[in-house]
Length: 489
Figure 1 (cartoon, rainbow, N blue to C red):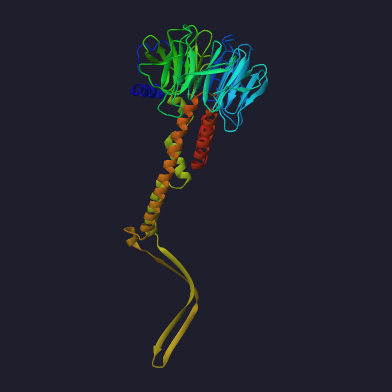
Figure 2: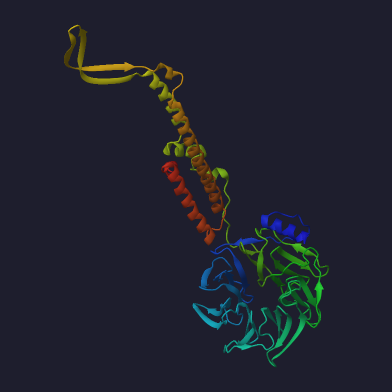
């Protein structure tokens, strides 16, 4: 398990583990799908140009090998679960949502199944003339031409995760084990027993027949891979070096390749050598370790559904966004110092303001206090005969006084010190906000420049960039936008 964690970490960070024997498989992203989190992918074997992709709540289809995609279905109140392409009907898809299933052909979408209240749909598949729907409450099947749904006896109440046609039988992976169902005589038998709700037992997830040895079956579970060499009558653990007990999201094997198979896990994508059970991680070009599903085209090229988009092992059908340097990102942008200065001046908290306060205080000590009065003069005298008063006319008076001691220290300096503390704290808060917004904006510009322009996440980043620009303009009185506009003149 330690090896798996290390590989998963390297995959998540996009680093190379330097594993020898990893082959020449290199993946590239298929652009043009607006959703990032891809859950399922299906490629037509008869018409390699036709493929379908399911995101969390949407179905996309392409008729030109992935060069262009169109959104076919958007589910309103449920998530997608699974899909498959009907090879007997060109360009016809079957989509399973968590509550309902649909037949999609051309411009029409027909609902063919609805789950009961509280029931969840996990899988939809076709074998021969029947459609099968696996749910949290058993397995349903019906004739493709007449969807009169029946339940498989013995599976009611079981969570069925996937089904696979093997000869005349249907192999069923459920939480209680592996079953084989024959729709002709309506018989059901169990060959692999799981512990049901017991968390320690392996939970069957998917069954695949070996491409070169049809009697050999592969079973992907929550605790690694099991194999059967007698068409599922008996099972044994298939030990995988480097990924033994990993939970399997998908197990696949191309019909033309019989020496190994592939597994999709949340710890990466691996190719398993059947002869020695060695797991080779295939990660070049993959930015994530969470691989949800896979499919192959007729030529054997691999398509991967991941939480970071759709990837293929063949040459990319569209050019990825080009990377840009830091100098290119900064082109037309004012430097951080200019933005800081604009913010400090606009909010009247620049350090020069405090310096001006101290200068004005010294000038105040040099300047006299000037007072003017308008009054009349009254004189008095005292003699032996009594008091005598003399009243003069109204006249103007003026006085000038200096407090030269304030040249050394002024009581107003205490007031300036208190105001300086408040101004300094305001300045720190403003600079902290400006710095955070400025560099977050540059990081966002770089992410947008290296992202797929067609996906919804990129649009959200562009809206966030406009929001950051508006906030910085609020700090600086529009300085950022004005500087960028001036640089474009």
